[in-house]
Length: 470
Image (cartoon, rainbow, N blue to C red):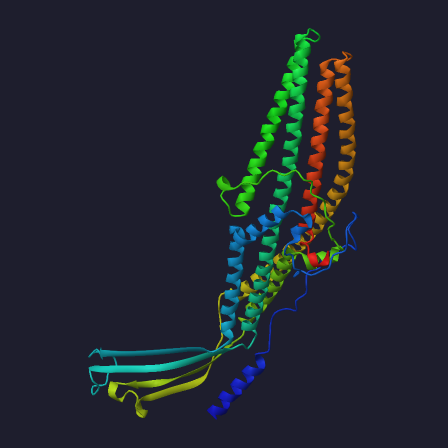
């Protein structure tokens, strides 16, 4: 009869092990537009949060940027920290999975013991001093009646996938930061080249005013103005070089190099703006790793509701133990010294002061929190794409307009210098024309750099590029 009850309990446990108390999971709703409001010369993107983003920066055709990105991937400490965090998540998954298997333990002891003569109910014929030797094995298996283990494994897998997406997001963010810093550095190189050429022109203008002043053609005021203009330009050059040095130090840290030993040779070749795939807003939900991470954490929280609910129901553990025990080592492995036991045990909380209710409430609220964070990430992502599309479009127009202004300013400089040599205008007109030309030309460089930065930010906003789809 007892054996029948045992087998019945085991059979029932097997049937109930398929249960799960977690709610049916659905991805939180988010308002998604049919297309982005800003349209431009962009190509469609292929949706997939697992796209191969490796080498996306090659679209800029900058070998030095490629080399720096490779150094970042190999040694950046923040990226390595994210990798180790991901490895921890994988280890935790294996740890949780182990709960689905029987736990086997073995123990043995040999001791000399003495009983108290005044121990309650002590047998008067029993020995006071005796030896004890025990060697045994115990197997325990908690049957997953209500899906607690399975929901825990599901939650840990979701967290592992979120950590994997976090790793991808961290790597993409660092790669983007490096690309943006490199582009800004090259923009400063172009400004340095421009201001150096301007300084040379200002020096010639100063020499001209000094010659004319020596000949008594112009007053010392023109010399003072020319000298002031040259000194201001030299100060600008010093400031730009300082900004370049600081940016170079930041790049050194990104590639895990010492700023003191790191240097990037100046380069003024213009970087072309590449074609960037953007697709439609609905595709963004499948491309960005940070969105994927946020969604997986909603799924994780949902699974933990099932874990919390399972605490309301009995836990069934199947146990078996056996071994040998004797008061003499010589007879320890004889048949009479053997012992064993097998059978299920059922346990349930009768009163816990509201602990389980609080745990369940906390799990439900955590799911709502994760859902709200997911919606926030998605909406912020849509905004980032829209912002970068707008910047790319408007900055492109503004760059063209500013280039026209720079061309006009250069013409104004030539005319003012020509008229100054003929004595038709004062040197103040030359100074104003030259200052306006320098400002206009620097603005062109700044706008081009900002447009390139917006392009890099757009790549980040759409979740990276797959060169196979370009």
